[in-house]
Amino acid sequence: MVAEGALSGESRRREAIEAASGSIPGRRVLLLLAAVAIGAAAFFMTVGESPQRAWGNLWYNFLFWTALAQAGVIFGAILQATKGHWGKDFRRIAEGAGAFLPVSLLVFIDLYFGAEYIFPWVGPVEGHVNLQWLTVDGVFLRNGVLLTLMVVVSGLFLWHSLRPDARFLEGRYSGWRAALVGRLTRNWRGDEEEAEHSRSKLSWLSPLLILMWITAFTLLAVDMAMSLLPGFLSVIWGPIYFIGGWLTLLAFVAVVAGWHAGVRERRLWSCWQFHDLGKLLFAFAIFWTYLWFSQLIVIWYGNIPRETNWFVQRTEQGFGPLLVLQMILIFGLPFILLLGRAPKMKPRWLAFVALLILLGFWIERYNLVFPSIWVGSPPLGFPELGIFVGFLGLFGLTYSLYASTFPLLPLRESLMEGEASKGP
Image (cartoon, rainbow, N blue to C red; front, side, top):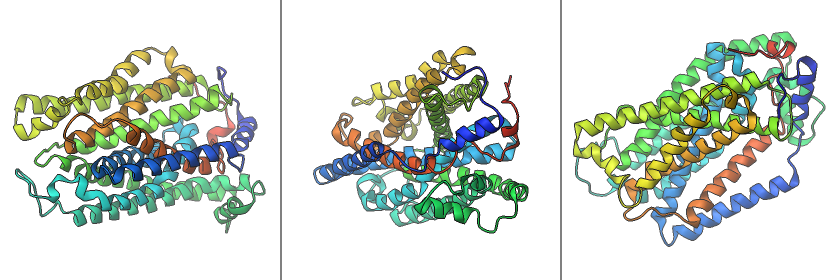
């Protein structure tokens, strides 16, 4: 268990650098590659017999992992834009999730070939459907352009975020990692000059990236999820989706930091920093549920069939228990388990609650897709588990490549030189 206070100054810097070992343990690589192979096998074994089920699993896993990965870069952007010093020590963990974004873009391109099995408006439909807007080529072109821009700007943000720390990594690596560090330190101006230059770049990249995130992920949620029920309309659909991604990112940070603090016994964060992270996790679990309930209550008392159908689909044919389980895992249990100060200050306990939230949102993304496209009881079996494991393997590989190359903390932050803040 982490001590009351974290290490400070040079000790923290040394341990943060040593955490980036420059290699991934062989067993972990084999395990992650096996997970990817299981996912690929589950997809190809299912796509011939039930293409809608196979592509549906690819669809909702894309929505889950993409929202998580992009929110990782947004975490750093929000801290930069708001001058939020409390979370800078968690920034490198969060930004590492962004390493999955290029893979996510490739998965998005693949989804084009399964669109006919997912989009109900591809064939003849009745109701309020804007078929001038909803075309397969149109959906993938506009979202593909926005996602590509997001990947490019996110990469630029990460480049300027990581560059000031690159001097600490010189001489540690060989191969592609050494080449990457060499690129990061090319034309070095000096430590202070580089830190100031990066802050200057990030000061305008951060608000730009946040605005792009809100715009692109609102459109993505509308085109790739809301349109699955023709005629359904929700004006807060975008915030429900990207705030959900933000909450999964906070949960991911809590899991990784909790593992480092509780299992690896790295004293890089104080209990007060975990307390701050726990408060944010607690608050956004409530906020996301508030958004979800705001949508429900308006549709409930409006009682318009083309809107209520969305909830009817998720309470009939066996999907009801999944909806209840989703809300218990995202809101019910976290609300109870994180009440008070003490639970938020325990890294392992916080990581456990965060895992519940991550599981809840995986079910929530499943519930975004399958009730709208599937007739009959919920498909739950090897395809669902296998494809999820495949995505987990891909995410784990990209994150491991990042985490084995870059330190766990931002080394050039001024807070590295002093004692960790206790917070309120």
